[in-house]
Length: 419
Image (cartoon, rainbow, N blue to C red):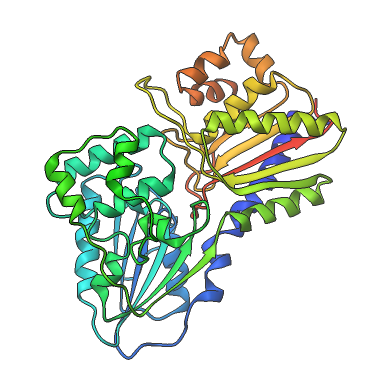
């Protein structure tokens, strides 16, 4: 039989393999251009993995200047950036005053470039909030309010980033347009379903493909804007982007295949459910619970592995949690103590929503333990307070900032040997 200590180790080994596969030091060097332009080389790093991507890039190529914009607390531990690098740590998931400072710094950097110069853009998820430069006619406070409303609505990331791009002087390829005529090379660690680089950090160097306009998206989610903002958004035009090349150097599928290899080596049949799953976290959990029970009924030792970005429509409950915590708690409720099934769901960047945990582990005994402690799983799920549930049980997963970000990673292990 497999006890909880061993089960925790197995689940973490699979998750950690996924995170390791998409670290900058493993995925970025093969793609970096080593040739030098005739002019200056400037590195622009944006997102939760910005510090780690910049550190790796600066180890491999010559640069004259660097601007690194990341989330508070996400710079690589023990690394001192070179003297020519500017580091700005800003707010996430909501932009703060430092995000405005970052936006102005990015505009100044891009406008300083000219013929013969090269901009190396290192882009990872989270950058939409970390760098703010509202279009004319939209105040920073208005942009913050729309961002909060979108987060609360449960809108998928593609919809959110279309709106964010329409409100920005930098997103949707506008940073690259400002840098013209300099050459722009973009390297992306993707955290979005489908891995379109235009949707990672709202694509500062990559124009958005054709799609629904921002005002229609806001209307669909019941988010009202003033007539002045409506006019400003309607006048927000994309600029042409030239002399630009983009490479996606890491994505969720890379992490999932690494996870599958570790699971297989441990004796489980890996079943990859997809790297781009979207939808309500609780609804996805219910579907996965049914799949897990079906595999268990066949007596199989299997590992159901998935990625993507689910959503949680936030109420005014004041609860603490995130997509992965909500998913795992909903999975626990749906499985109702089913034996032989365990799971781990966590954000690859190490922070899940408003919690300080990356996610949580579900053991076959989780619900029974909660019942003994008189913890009401259903009530906490409805109150969107999933963090409190797993904290009380000691089943939260803590990693701290991991230095990368390919969004959610989930593992469900089915094994008759689980206690």
